[in-house]
Length: 305
Image (cartoon, rainbow, N blue to C red; front, side, top):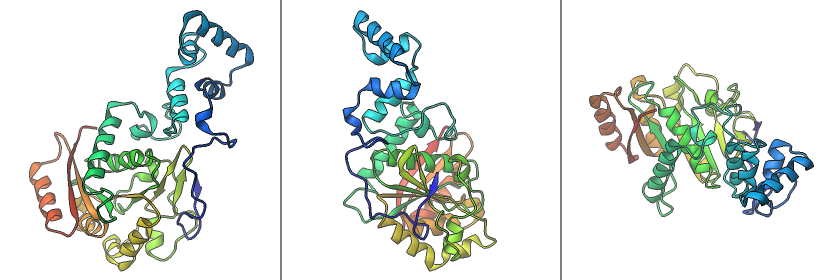
């Protein structure tokens, strides 16, 4: 992970090419699946020849032959495919990201497909290209509804489109995004809003090159007052000019008006509840408050996670 300059915001002066390349500058699509498997497993020439012999003898693909000979795993083959088709994710060994980031560690899981479906609905509706540029605030009635889990995975699937995506942790009550992504939390949103922004406030994720995360930073004693200042609205407007998608994690509504203020300044709001836990009364109450405000309401998601 590394900080992005200047002033805590990513520079767009050297936008990446649309053609994916590897760390040696070679075009990714020119490389075979076998090249990637050889790279990730550090296979010797003798092992590669062994796989090729098995492949020819049985008329199967290189990856299938490598798995059959136990020289590679199914995850290795899926990772190789994702690299060849420029679909970034972290191999599912759990070493890079928290296991809650299911879209990052297992892009073929049914839960990940659910996030892709929600992404598609948003891009056809409240966040469609013909709509005004707005950030998406993710709200929930209670702590523990899965709001941070939802916001993080939604940001991941947006970034997997190749779109520059920023996830902001604006939950200055019970922040979790720095934990999920394994990021330092010394500086973040609170630092920027209080005028103490550092160059490493926004983090780029090495395994997900289109995803950036702005953690919450030091928890302030006056979170609502900090969010109600003009600085947050100005910051969102600036970031919408630098990123294709901005997803904002907010405090639960049990903490007061923070989430409603954030929704109004972001422009689009989606509410997350937990099946079997969230009471319908509190869910309906939050929906009513959001729909009476200026934010465009994108819907309710019931979380099973």
